[in-house]
Amino acid sequence: MSQTNTSASALLLCQREVKSAIHDTFGMFLGEAPTEIPTQKSEQSEEAILGMLSFSGEWDWSLTIGFSRSSAASFATLFAGFEIEFDSADMGDAIGEVANVLAGDIRAKLEAKGDECSFGLPSIIRGTTTQSSSPQGVDSTTLTYLFEDQPFWVELLIETDD
Amino acid sequence: MELRALVVDDSRVMRNMVMESLKRTKLADFTFTEATDGADALDKFNPDLIDIIFVDWNMPNMNGIDFVRTIRENKKIDHIPICMVTSEKTPDKIREALERAGANAYISKPFTVDALQRKLSELLQGMEEKKTKKSSGFFSRLAGN
Image (tube, rainbow over all chains, first blue to last red; front, side, top):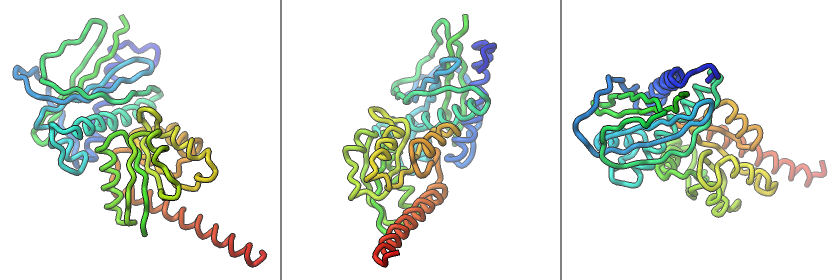
């Protein structure tokens, strides 16, 4: 990202490439690209699994992809080609790999536009979804998708230039 | 044809995906050795028992590219074909793996069985050509040519 970019415009650029990578990468192994839907804050808490990755480059930013118990099971099974249960160690492995594959495509798309970056190894968090808020000095955006009527979401966090 | 493959990836799910996809190519009867990173792969690698290697790039302890370099530095075992199977897909990374580190093939994740079949087919052809060259060289030497 060029030096003249603000964190807000960098976040927009990341968001565009993330959307494109979700369309291309997930469309490939799901058979069709997932549908983006408006993000709504859920009042209900539910079990979820999150895959997180950090990017370093002109801007430091992170990507978190989250699945509920039900969406994780069907998503991971389609990704791997064999059944994966939510509570198994393989589920963490599969969601980490999903995050990793997505990051690889995002990086390639950013680099094709002249924005070099690198990303780290994915980490996995399991727990119950709660309302999240960004800390000071961080801009964020959340994208929500539907796949086989099951939602999953992607949250991007970027440090602000303030 | 029997093929003994070393599959290196820190994700057990991905190792299973690679092994299952290789079986589905139906290009060989596979037996597998699994390793969780480059260091583990070096420990488990026996050139007399491995015909081909499939290795991820981003792994803890020793990453895939360092593993490839280490194998290629040893002239006694540098004939064994190595295919990188990785989420890294920028032209620079592909060049680094194929031209500088010495991998023979490169597949980006996610991959299809068809894509894997094409790459494996090329690798097997290369292995055959090497064998033919080696034996024809041997017979030429016998014949005094």
